[in-house]
Image (cartoon, rainbow, N blue to C red; front, side, top):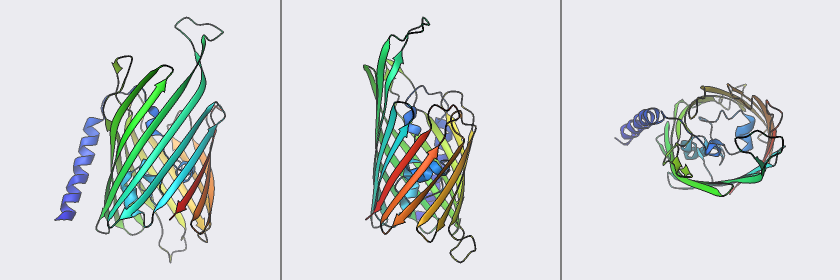
Length: 303
């Protein structure tokens, strides 16, 4: 009975997300930023991938696959005057997995201009944004997992500020031990407003798959993943994410990914090294416009 109820929830989540995400969005795009250098190196093809504390940013159901508690710290640096910090933690109690996520972003010295073009800016201002997330996930049997994430987001642009509440919903289904299918709907929530002008949050629907060959396979240690992303903000086209990971001797990892139909990114690469309960991950994500290449560093600790 519980398994049938869980499947019904998946159907409701998918239908609600597809019908709700129809209008355009104006700001709060930082709510689409994922966590974790592992995911970034794999092209953010992470809707059906689990195994670290950053995965619930793409699909909260992935937290259900965590077998131990873990914390994750990520720093992102840009060539421009911008930086991001991520913190996430997941623990378990029986069948339930609980998690907490914090995101802090900042861009400094943005040029201030008015409607009259000029060679000199009128001054500069800063952009600060923040997100607090709480994850909850649970497996239903050996194949199905469901999860959700409650979020509060805040942005201060110069002297104006806005905030919003949102929820992410997700599911992962494993028809085979080596195959995972995932779906998530992100940023369903209230409408923030700047200067009394409300706008929708940047919602998106993600559908993904990942393949991890069995332990006795020749391809042991390899993960292939792919995502189909349906954005519902602005006039953005649908996107594809492809990623792969190779783990050698449970110590060293090589990763690569590619994003299709993105304005700012395409190829990404990275790697990782682990020692006992410590995992160090790195990702390099070059920009198509050569102005915002990113280096992402993550420390994960299993408790």
